[in-house]
Image (cartoon, rainbow, N blue to C red; front, side, top):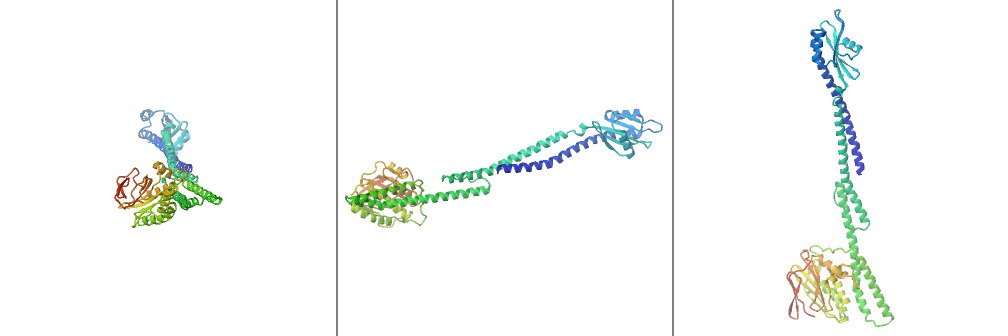
Length: 473
């Protein structure tokens, strides 16, 4: 496209330059010729009055000498009254040309070696016709023509070069966005989902770039939704798998029991593989719009009813607090249920049987806090656990559980913290922001007060005034 535009502009400009330069060159040559012969006519006119008065050769020689050079001016007087013809100056025109001018009685020009001559007839007092001859050299006729043609040629070349340069810049302006669009399409086709095209260039290419970027965003969103759905569904399978694994532990010994435990372990490994594969690209969970969401208290009661049955089988003490009244949060019901299942599943997977756990819901003016705590051995490195939640998982853990919880909290402008619980084990705090503010990543100032055996315990890192009590298990 770029070179095609340059060629078209080159052809058009060349045609325009030729169409104007050639006639201008011819006009300049004619003007120079007219100027030279006008000068010759003025020289001839200086002799005409003298010829009208006298034909004396001596006087005419003085007039010719004063009017012009002897080499360029000549006077031809015919024979009259018995006097021979007189030729003053250097004669260059032929006798035929001089005779023709006398007969016709009007000025004429003739070509002679080295230039041209102007033959001007002058009527004498005797009735005869004298002829004044003025020599015009070729250098006078073409004086300034070469310079003018050179200027015209330079201007024409400059116009052509300038038009080509402008066409090239315009071509670059058109081709560069098109090339970026092609490169972006290739990158997107190669799987680089972050490929985007700058919205620059002509209007049509800008619109194409906008459409391409919109398409790329849609593709990324579709793939992200697909991966998130696969990961979330796979992780939710781990809830019944945890129940199956715990139940198979009570089957005792025997071939059937071993086969069942092996099948459950194999199924668990396959689910973990699906989760790790799906987590290659993790989109941020989108917060629901205003007025939507769910009742956190109701979801907590529902999920705790499910996990309490399993906790009873393992001899675990369970406490739930802060769910006696509705607590609206801007989170989808299924997302909150998945986050709770992920945290409670971790409790059953990573703490020994008989370990107590609790779920507290604290409802504040601008935030809701969900605390999941246990009396297990705790987490020695909470930062590493959160990093694993953002990574690929290790030590038999996919890390998706904490990642699901983190994305749920961050979708509202909140965050997730891991610390020590009052039960002696791990406490995972989910801060769900109600007003959609951006989360403060490096710690909050304030306190969340919880009551345990009549004491007020202050937990750092929870801003705002939060209400809601809990009893010890």
